[in-house]
Image 1 (cartoon, rainbow, N blue to C red):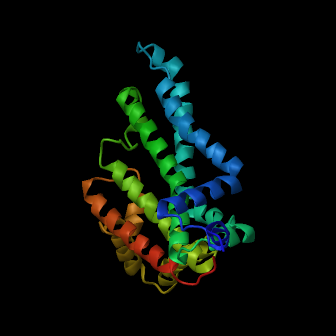
Image 2: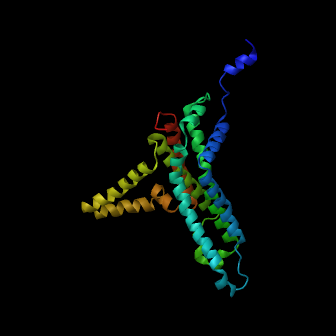
Image 3: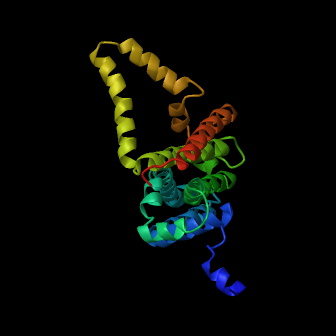
Length: 270
């Protein structure tokens, strides 16, 4: 038997992890072409709008020129909601789009289940990161151009790429993405488990309130909001964190990454 005949019967060579990430990234773009295109345009349009918004040269021009920046501020507020929502719910689309045919092709590669799943998690994480970077960059452009002086309320709460809020925002959003990815790996769904978790968080203080334990509710709420290592606090100050918030955010991201890697090697719903 010739070498050419033998090579026809050999399995395809195993791609490296970066190759797997590229394969899954192409599959994600193919499965969600319209949504990916819209979000990609948003990642480019927002910093461009922040850069091209005309800055008033005279105080008298402020009133007439304020409508443009106000529209940009509304756009950035929508971008924040989109980025946070995408970080939590994007894993549902990441795992839902992998059809039986694509699974069969991927299963033909001699790589482990954990590598395949983690490659898809990494490939899906680029879009939330791109949106976060676009928002951080736009806020920084506005601050550098001096819009914070003209409209103090406009950029004072926005993060700065040069400050500590930027790494905190990225780490917290990655934590949200990894949390939802672990739910997708374990249950095959994201929205329903998140709804159950949110309902459970709501029912605890509601039950204490019915039991007349108002002081307990106050103590729990204070701990959740004020404790430096509380995940609830980190999500509440997502884009306005300081130096003391980086380490807790890194801890929770690392913990969720370890959980995701563990679940990727188990037989789950995906």
